[in-house]
Length: 387
Image (tube, rainbow, N blue to C red):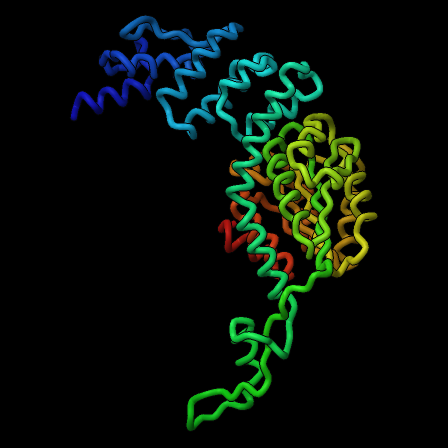
């Protein structure tokens, strides 16, 4: 037990003269240690470990990177591999190597890798482009498998519940809470019961469009994961006849990708990560897409760092809300939260009753359901995230 504990500490501390453990690694442990050192000892001088020297960095050698990618997939689970790949790209500046098809075929696909590929889209050589599309296609398919059915179920249920009727066709359609409250005057004390002379229930879903949804997504570099998730959710929502869904991405320019919602892979390659940010211009464009304000949901996904006219942006948001649009601001749509955002703009939006918070992809279906039912989104976020 003591040897196992020392082994684990040795792998955590990374060896060298300062680890204080004095425990040697052999075999697979030594290979795991070297794979970790390649990323996490970079620039720290390395050190001497057992089974060969411990050194940091992967250099600029494609074969060495390929071997390292193979090693980490051998010794670590997929979730850890994805984290190590992301860290290697950021710490060791391996983005250039991702332009090589053989590298793209070796990596473990994930949302962060897709974000990096989208940022490199315009400089990607033709021979790497199809490999990049294959990576993006794999990630999109996995996200759709994970999120699509739940999103459709949550939204469809919310649309059903949002349409009230006094002639529910099935027992399952009766809103018992509202029915009881509506019939309290018919309470019979001797029988300790309420006679429901008037039923309140949910109408079944209609075929006509019931809600307009506009997703407006900041495509600055820090929003990469949010762009990927927004594209997938936009495609899912667009597949529902009861919704009219639009997807707009922006930096200093505004691009309407609504006509590509049928193919989320092409949609994502239509985005261009990086550049400045003009939220005001994007909001102005989206205002023109809304034809039924009282039945519309406007979701702005942005860290709120405005490079355009701040006061005009706030005025436009206030006007949309005043017209009856359900306005929601997501500081991020990702699993990482929103560590960096403009607190002043977030506070200004909150003051006018527009909630601004980070949302995880798993919580997004519930958010859309709450918005369709016109519930208090601020309270929903507080209950869901404890914020």
